[in-house]
Image (cartoon, rainbow, N blue to C red):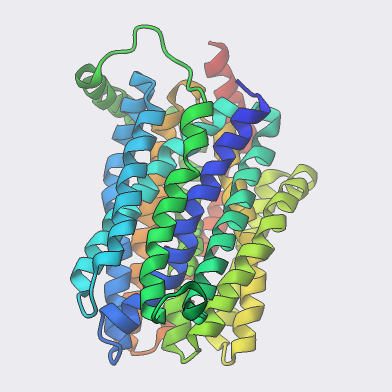
Length: 424
């Protein structure tokens, strides 16, 4: 199962769906939402709407994730669920082309559904990591996925940016049409490059797997049993709580950075340039971070990233010029891929293999619930204070709390329990 074709086919899904994360989530959707679909004369209001849209999508996936993971484990259906959410994400992303100026409610609806497809698919993509990677290669394979994601998402985003800045080269009448076409290009890119994981990654089949109805019944029971027995997985629980907090900060920076930059007066071209910097710096950094982890330990490497993000958040509060935004973009690029990839691979070491989709359901559930809190904090604090700088500064509380709990997590004990379950 651990052949190179499976590894690269699995990792290529990150290349595929990261186009949504870059062009749509981080780049053009917030830019277009604020200046085209919503009221451009009320930036605080559009920040609030964008934060709520991200939060609603996160709540939707978070509520379903553990149950769907449990059902997928029972049915040996991780790839089927991945295909289902992939279909939703691709169709809804392409549908953004249909949304006209001022129709912010329809734009938000399509975005929420596309985000649901993106985040839901990641549950089952993440759970397949343990299928394609041996234990001693988890950090590398997880980092490879994120690295390919950054370069793939960055390449398409670069093309989309050129389309936006010089639409006449492509025979496009104006920048607004170029952005709408970029949503279609993401849908096509995401769909086409997802084919390898669907074709070449083989999911182990459990003999005598039940059908959908019985799997749903057993999934509820297994989910209930797991929740009751979480006292036996104290290390997993502590790590998940830490992850919930610190990844919230990371995700909030990702989805709110462009909105923040626009709110304090930076030009859209500068913001797009900074996003491209993040992508291409993060590509080698994600792979390099796995080597750092092999020297100082995976947990310590994640903690280093949390400390770096705390500094980035403080610097964001004082940021005044566009050169500051470029500096921050470079710093985010150095640490973003590493903290994401190593969190995923560290979690794989402390969970039972037989319940990987369910446990990654919990993992993504908490990650998505964290994404409810972060954008809501930024949007709400901005609305209350009338100052977006206070909104972005509030994120540092999540990094502090998450880092503290991470250092309290006994990873060695978690690995021992996971091995005992597998041997048993």
